[in-house]
Length: 523
Ligand SMILES: *Cc1c(COP(=O)(O)O)cnc(C)c1O
Image (cartoon, rainbow, N blue to C red; front, side):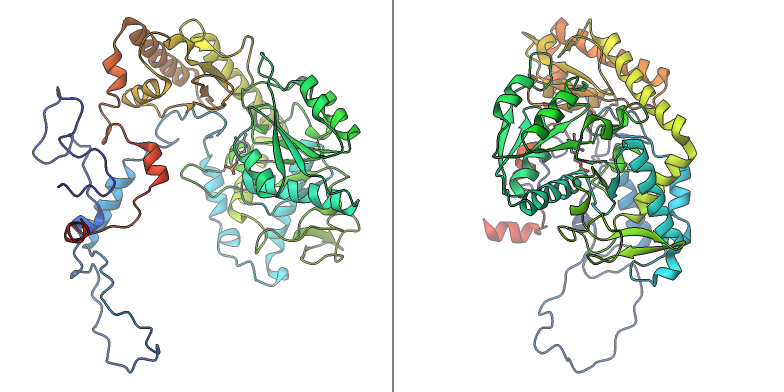
C-alpha cells in the first residue's frame, strides 16, 4: 500500500486522464515535493559538528533513549525543499485574494521596512522602560489613531487577534455587570454572525441565543427588541455585517440594548469599509475590536500574527485589561498594576490577558500605514474598497445571483441560485476558480445565505485586475449553465493535488510521520 501520510491524491490519481503522466511526478516546472522525511536521511546532516567529548550525564535518567531520527539534508537540498514548498502557497503578493470577511489587504513594503528597524524589531518586552520610550510612544500613537477614528475614549492594545479582542470585550462587559451585582447570563448574536462571536460568548460562560435576520440581510429589530430583557448581558453585532451590508437600524439597536441594561459589543472586523466615514462611538457601541490585520494592512495570511485592539466606551473603560501605556510628565510608562496610572482607565480592570504588551510588529506596521495614508488616505481606502466590491457586484449580478438587492459595502455576497439545476455546487465552482488561477472566495458563509459566495476585493486591486477576475467568473458561470459539469466536479485539474477531504483533514489531521515500516507494523 502506498504510504500517503495524509496526502489523498498521489501522482497517478489525477482525475484528469487527458494530461499525460510524467516519469518524475513533476508537472512541468511545478515540481512535486515529497515530505522531508522521505528525502532526508537520519544518518546525514547538513552541518559538520565535531563529535562531542564523552561527559558524565547529569540528566538523572531523563536522557533520550533512542536517536531523535530527524531527517538530514545538505544545504542545497534543504533550500530547494522549502523553496518548492513555498511555491505551492497562494499569496496576496501573487494574485487577487477574494476572501470575504477576511480582508486580505496588500501590505505596503514600507510597513515591512519600518517593522524591521532595530529599534522596534530587536527590543525585548522586559527591557527597562527608559530604553524603549520610542516603542511605547508608537503604541500610544496607534492607540490615539484608533480612538480618534472610532470616536471612543479608551482602547486596550494588548489583545492579539480579533477573537481575542472579542474575549477582551466580553470580559470587560462581564466585569461591569458583576460590579453592579447583576450577573446576567445571555449574549445575543445575529444568525449571520462570524463563528467567533458565539464561540467567544460561550467560552466566557454565557448562553448564546440567535437573533434572526430579515429578508434583506439585516438584524431583525423587532425580534431583537422582544428578546432583550434583564437576563441579557450583551448583544454582539458586526457592522458592516457579514452579508456585506450596513446595519441601518444600529442606533435604535444600541438604544434598545442600553434601555435593557445590556452592553453593545460590535465586531469591528469589517471596520475597513467605514474608516473615516462612521465613528462607532457615535453609534452607541460600548466595545469593539479592530483587526489591525484587516483594516490597517498588517499581513495575516497563513494564520498570523494579528492584533485585535479593543476600543471602549466611557461605561466600560474602567474594566479594561492591563497593561496599558500611559503618558505622564512627558514620559511613557507601562501601567502593569491596578491603581497605578490613569484615574479612570482600567481602574476596576478585569486583569491581564497576555504576558506582555501586545503585537509590537503589528503596531509598527499599522502606524506606518496610518501615517503614510493620513486621515484622508484611510478614508479613501474605505471608499475604494466599497467601490471595488460594488463594481464586482454590478458586473456579476446578471450571471450570478446576488443574495440581496441593492448595493453592498466592502464585500459582494452571492448565493448559489445561479447554479440551480447545473449539478455544480458552490464548492465545485470554487475549485474551478483554482484552475483559473484564483484563490476561492469565502464559501458557505454567512450561513443565512444558501451556498454563499462572499467576495471581497479590497481597495488596492486595480480595475484591470478586477476586470480579469470578473471575466473568469463570468466564463465559469456560463460554463456551468452550458452543462460543462466535469469542468467543475473534477476541479481543480491543474493544482498539485485534486479534491481534498477538507473535513477529514481538519477533524483527523495527520501530524506525525511514520516510516513505511512502522506503518506496516501497525497494520
Ligand atoms: C476575521 C474576523 C473575526 C476574527 O478575527 P481573528 O483575528 O481571525 O481572530 C471576527 N469577526 C469577523 C467578522 C471577522 O471577519
